[in-house]
Length: 91
Image 1 (cartoon, helix red, strand yellow):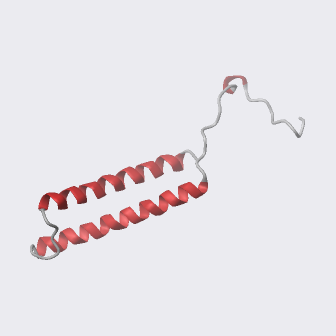
Image 2: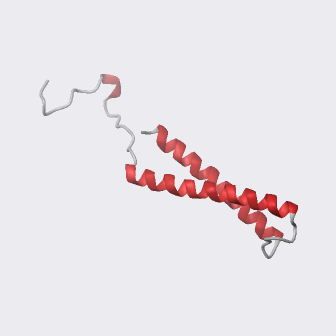
Image 3: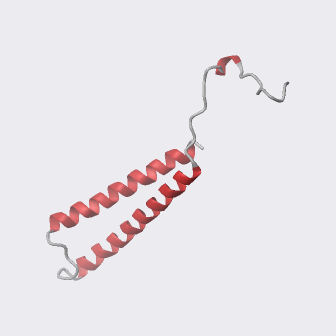
């Protein structure tokens, strides 16, 4: 074996390239964003509990807006956690 060249790939694996790995910095930033969104979901759940016990306290202009914001946060959290899971399995 020559130190300058890697060993040849087995016949069945020739032509296949490994998947591109995301940069660690990019993954760390995505983890930070995901953590912030998950914290926002926890705070939103606490807000839902408070509003359930005190209907006149801490309300947004409309119930529809409250539902859209809450469901948007949940959807974003699920999407980010799923994306991170896929990226971590490709490392």
